[in-house]
Image (cartoon, rainbow, N blue to C red; front, side):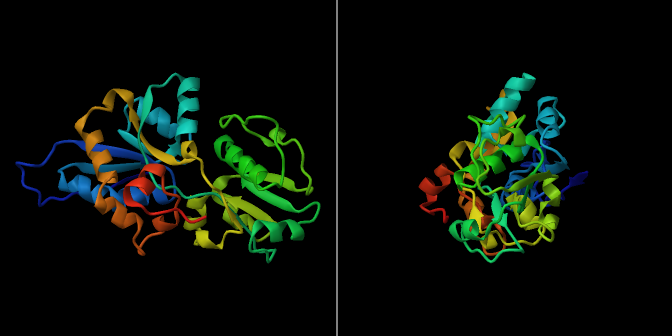
Length: 277
């Protein structure tokens, strides 16, 4: 699905650029982050901004590599690196951005934290997780870090499956489903590991999670471009905007959900605004 933004027609022609920047995004808040925190400043610089929305996590990198889009915003560096190695692509990170974490949500238990949840769980309780490999891997690692399962060694984020589970001491039934459907499963399962973007899309406040994923820096989302474009002016302008007070003010605004996202290390250091876990 393609959606094009309106551009600032009031810009003087002497300062207007002829360049159109096409952002590739997946469903959820990152398109909104670009729309509200990046696009207005790009338009002030004279760029035109368009979007192309993808329904999976494969096509945005392929489209970037073949020139269909100029930038994508959907992935972390661990996934980008592995994908580029597997597909022999030459894509690079521009800068990391605030990222919505995974969360454990439930309509069936009253637990407010992970220790309370462990006391309520019963053998045979079902937990739904995303079925695409990169998010499935994240969910399994999240469940491992919470002490709900153990896994076998390192998980490949492009081929992860339930076969990576080693021990399952709580007897959970792990049920992978399409990531976008995870919020709907809350009516029928004990718990669900829901991606932050889909929780937001379903009207579920991130603050209601029983437990939240703590991202390591290489699983914080990023803006990516073709490596050959890294030194181009439009890329420098995007990076400058992300590092600006305008971007910070949109992220921290009560108007948007971005303030509940995990902030990357550079952002915490630059603005002295700490993450809340």
